[in-house]
Length: 316
Image 1: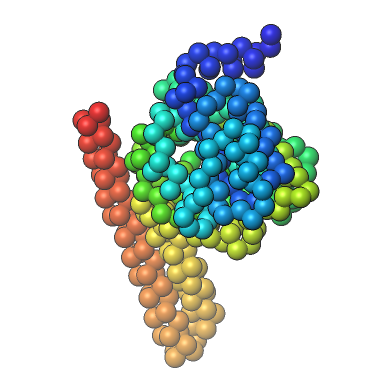
Image 2 (image 1 turned 180 degrees about the horizontal axis):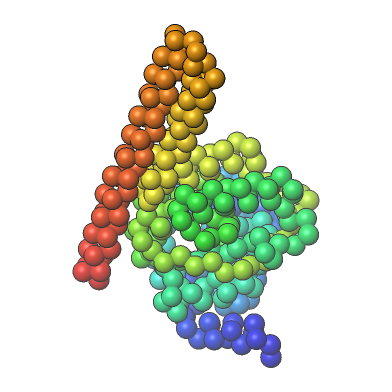
């Protein structure tokens, strides 16, 4: 018996599979959903919830025949489906993954272990390190790396794959999060909310497989990439206001240096000298204002997180 099998057996001994809900948000995944559900059934999971975004193919029928409970979401978008599902799930632990066959159900214990052992509130499966050849296009891999780098800077985090669809968390932890995003940004919002709410987030390595040829990705690399970056920046104001306001300080500081340089070059022209010195002074004041605002907001944010953590500890 190898080490991974030993670890899997140890993880299984830490929880009852009847306490776990497997959540699969899907849309037109008839080519893969059956196999995904069947694998979880074979492993002994009894609560497999397929939340369907009004598929036009045979996704619902195949999922039900394989042993899953199927619910049709009332609205549109992956985020809306997840928020709706979270309100219905009552199990102690929740494992969420994509139903397109890119995630391995057999790695569920790897994702669950930090949660059931009490080491983490939320676990994400890092797809980057163990990706199969062809799982990412060059554009998608580049976009993922850039977004993850931006997230690490904004949230002072060491997470390498914030866009993964493989998650495990407790129902208690998910109820603490204030989730509003309706589309693919929901996964980024979840992780950002975990940091804002001072939850323990851990990352584990999971395999990522190429999509089947008949399955088309619903993620638009440019449009959705922009939305995710904008969301990361927006959420950072609650966790790292100095970063949020500091970004705006950079262009004004660059303008300050530019106008100072022009003032030196045109120092013999009294009119241009006064104009550029005025503009440089304005840019410097704006730079200092953004930095000062960010610093003050950062103090308030830290105090708020500390208070929230204390209240949470007392309530428990």
